[in-house]
Image (cartoon, rainbow, N blue to C red; front, side):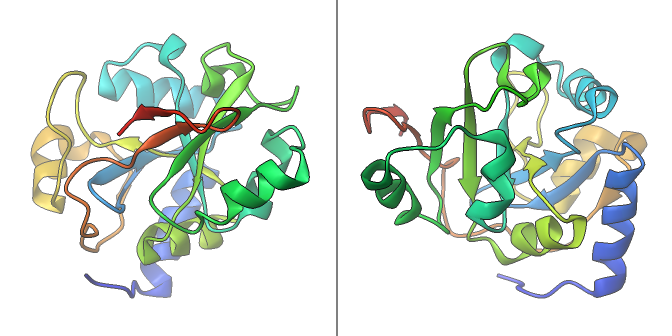
Length: 188
């Protein structure tokens, strides 16, 4: 797996994100599409590209747990420690959303799906951008998630604003999703 991306490419992608753009990048298992979670127009554009409904909610990735703090309600220490022990890593947790978490990300729920990514390119992009990103698989609704940059280009062509090069991680399926309150698997 390629673990380095030039600062130039990361800078271009970060500028696209700041301008409301949609970017593609490799993650632990598949290619992702991302945008600024605080920018409603960017999220709506990403959802339109995927042909996905807003009510489904979205996953956010970050390079550190601290990048997610503004979006989350504080958790009891024992629960927070258990979740943080799985990060960075390929586990997405559904956690209580802070009141300021955007409804266009939560799908109108009082929870938000979050992950501190272990993928070096995705983490570098979050750091270059300076915070969490919406992260959804790079595919149209009901389509197979892209596992290569060429598959992203075939699916989306020039409708995305930037593509950060790299290889996906070793996972064969998208990351598991767990309920942060119960530990139950929502997607395994």
